[in-house]
Image 1: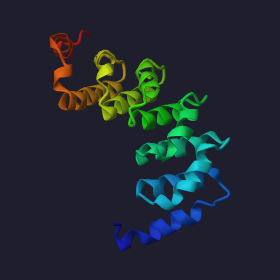
Image 2: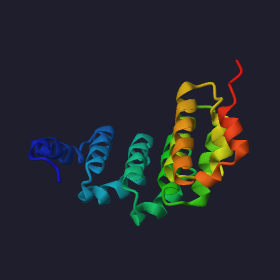
Image 3: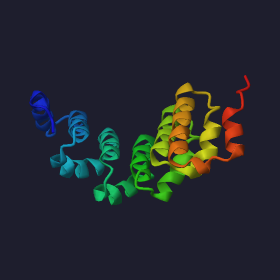
Image 4: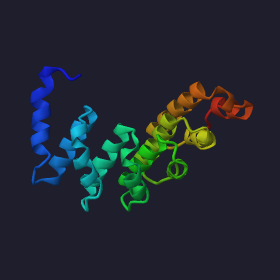
Length: 181
């Protein structure tokens, strides 16, 4: 249950859901979803279908936080959104539901040119506990971007804790091999 001290902030976000500025309403939506306000779900469904990329990004990010079946079908339509952030958030949400197409897309995203997309992909694969991504995550330990390397390492640890038998000697050798450079 939310403390009464946060009620004014919640009320502000609820008012801003109907803002004429789509970015304000998108962030109000994200705020309310993050505190578990289920009354915003109808707004989220509308935002996921928005023509505004920023609104779809915020809505897809919010859907990741829900982790429930209510949005699966609409998230599937956003898996291949032309905006890579909408796509990565949608695939991240679906990966939590063990959607194989989403997991495959996330594995592919580990090679995407944008480092933010790569580290989000690594993070979502770890959250999903995807043992099939171990080889790609090990490769990501050598990424040029430190955030990608850290998210890959953290994701490998998450997977190892959940599925210790999935790590064989080859994997352990690759993980512990000193980086050249």
